[in-house]
Length: 287
Image 1: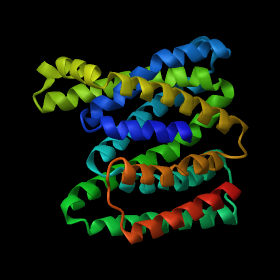
Image 2: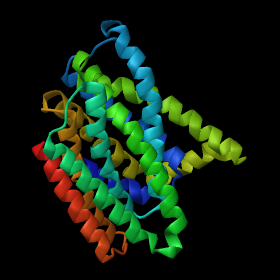
Image 3: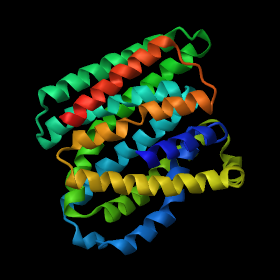
C-alpha cells in the first residue's frame, strides 16, 4: 500500500503533462527493466512450462487489464485525486463479488456489511462533489471510467489468482506487463490518429520522457514492488477480498496528499463518506 500511495501521487503529478493513453503504456514500459531484474530472485517459467489454460486466461486478462489501466489514468486526468481515491475503494466491493462468482469464496456478514458501507461512503463522496459546478462534467465522466474499472478489476483481480498458483509473482508480472504494453500502445496510437496527431506522436513521447524521466522511473520502481507484493499476498492471503481491502486503505493518505500537495478542496460530506469507506474496509479486513 505504501508503494501504491507513492506511485499514485506521482502519477497524478505527471498526468498533468501526459495524456491518459500514453501514460498507460509508459507506466508499464518503465517498469519492465525492474520486472526483468526481479526474475533473478525466483524461478522463471518459460511459456512451454505453463498450461494452456494459463495462456487462454492471460489473453482475457490482458484485454481487461488494458481497459483497467486506461480507465484509471483517464479518470485521474479528469478529476481531483481526493475525488478519485475514495471512489476507487469500490474496487474492494467488486473484488468481494468477483471472488464469490469466480473463486467460490463466500463473503461473511462482515464482508457484506463492509461492502454496503463502502458503497454508501462512495455515494456520499460523489454527491458532495456534485455541488462543484466548475468540475461537475469532468467528475461525472471520471465516475463512469471508475465504474468501468471496478467491473473489469472484479474480473481480473480474481482470475489472476489461479494464474499465480500455477506460476509465481515474478513470472506472472513479466508476462502480463509484456503482453499488455502492445495493447495499450496500439490504443494510444489509434486515439492520436483520430485526433490527427499521429505524425508528431513519436516526438510527443520523446518530449514526455525528457520532461518526466525521473518521475516515470520512480513510477516503474514502485509499480514493480507494489504488484509483486500484491501477487505474493494473494497467494498466501486467506481470500482475494482481504488483499483488496488492505490496498484500498490508500484512500485516506491519497486524500491527504490531494489536500496538502495538490491544494484540493474537501467539503464536510466528503470526510463523512471517507469515514464510512474506512469502516467498510475494516469490516472487509475482518472478513
